[in-house]
Image (cartoon, rainbow, N blue to C red; front, side, top):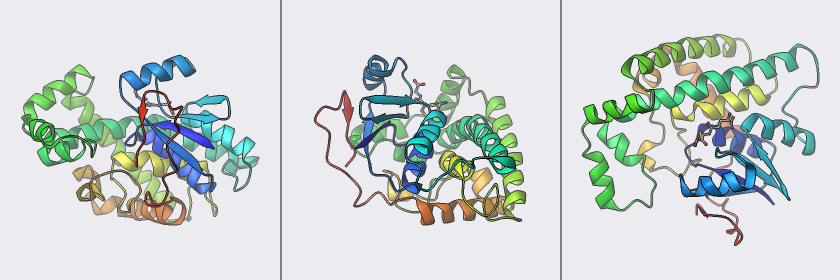
Length: 265
Ligand SMILES: N[C@@H](CCC(=O)N[C@@H](CS)C(=O)NCC(=O)O)C(=O)O
């Protein structure tokens, strides 16, 4: 069976999960433990990032490479058009989504977390002991903001990311006003990339991620509460309803050979 080394809340992992579900491929999720689990990933693949797909003895690194690999080796329900303007648009939008929504979404979410204690606490893994949750909730917002400087998330960088995301969402809404999918009448990798990468802007409403129920449908206030972007989030929810498999009832048994990782169940 295919195996996906992932973080549950990684937007690039989500892009791959949506592609796997769209293609109706069964796979087992292997939750990589930040730090120690990544060292194991380094040993296995020569790099530390998720997502990584394992197919037999082969490891495929990077969400774009995984998408191309899957379309080549599992050609049912193709996602990358073979030629012409549709192929051009698909490849361009996928690359753009990685660089834009993927990276800026992370910054925007950081801002939402630093402003909201409850959000912060709720984002901890469901296995986190209550005492630790309470400690994290208690970290004052300004301390969190100061921490952001350390990872390149100054208030200016966050504001700039949110302004740019607004432009991105406006562009997506304009396209989706005229066609059901980003490159035309059929879904392609462009749609799956944009939809999957946007989970950090607003978590999906449905039961697709291992998240506390209270966080489902929640997101970056400046984006999700603005009616100008409603068309995008409604479209994204429809893509999930149509193509993403809900989490319940989809938990293949743990792989006993899995490296330093925990299995989500
Ligand atoms: N270009 C990569 C980006 C992957 C990426 O940024 N992964 C993040 C999680 S969303 C990660 O593994 N971060 C941990 C690290 O960099 O050590 C892709 O498309 O897969």
